[in-house]
Image (cartoon, rainbow, N blue to C red; front, side):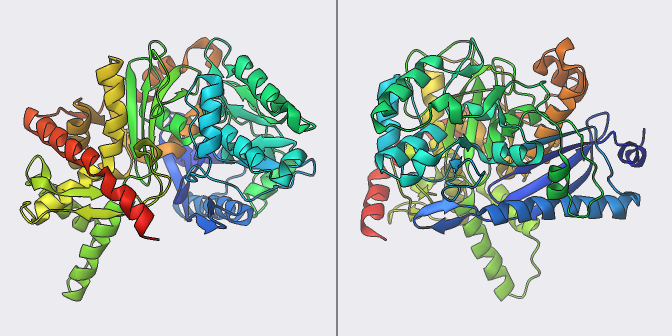
Length: 530
């Protein structure tokens, strides 16, 4: 069936993902290929010291993204979207969205980017004997309790961004297991919240006298392949303000961007992994067994079908790198030279490969915001060099590229060197890999592992959640998610692989040794520069 017929007959599948800077919608056909897309750009806001997106921005962004998709379908196929085979919603993980019994949000959405939860995360990590990151929903909830915020007693539902949108569109208070694992740890044997940790938390806060227990306010947990509700009449109007989209469309469980990244890179099987590198970065390694002990730098989450994953999450990745590239764009404009940003990125990135493997002594700290893995609640972007370093353009760009994955390396060194985790394939996706070969080579040097990139990975998380929606309507009970992805989506395609060279690995190791020593400079900058 061609794309037009697929859409016209209501057999297309829709995936929508809320990223940090862009909301993207992707329609796929019966062969799981993208046939249309829509986008909406947005940015978080710093309000009262906390990073947030308003509910108005969330709904305007969703509706504008869908309207852009609808307009593109009208332009390309001259038809309206009337119905769909399935829908999936994905969004950036973690954060804090508490609601009362009137479905009103009690405080502005607190995103994953906030690092104000240090005391709560430390106390919960000790209580559970399990690493509880600052950005997890349980950390935000307990920090609000420690801060005696009056809204806590009124909470009747606590969810993530994906869970919120899904709830409003379907009426179902559910969450995919991968996203749920960023709210509270999941027991791999039950694929549900850890009953032991739920009990410990309830006992901890019992003296507060809240009218709720933890499981009363958390979303129900669903694994990939389960139907998670259907589009209501109200939800259809909220999604498509033009009124053309009909209700009754099934949904897959809402998932986080980490889970959709694993799906989009065919990395849900044990001994596989992926690295997402954009505004933030994270690596996901699907484990064969639990780690020997908790590590503050490593988060334990799950795949969308409930397998245990070691996640290294870094708040900062390409924002500072992009800022430097924009500076060169301005210089090019001053010269009166026409600017093609793809060419600017390509020239600068490829020139970085001509630099010294250790960047000639140059250092960059790309911390726009706090970086928990490095022990920083706040960030100050810095470029550092001495008078004797080899300061040239190639080394400058190479140092900034190294910085984009430096913290990722620090966390993954624990997995590979201390825990002896073995991995057969790591796949990269995200903006860092848009210039062919460069980001791959840098990451391969950082992790001392071959890195693959697939052409389809560029479709991103919106494609990943569309695939999860397709899995729901594909007779999911008949095969595992990993088997379905391999047989029906990727068909054995492992992408283009780049292996690390000994020179690059040695150079990155020298860079990271200086980087760790120089972290004291970053700490001082945070204290001295407001």
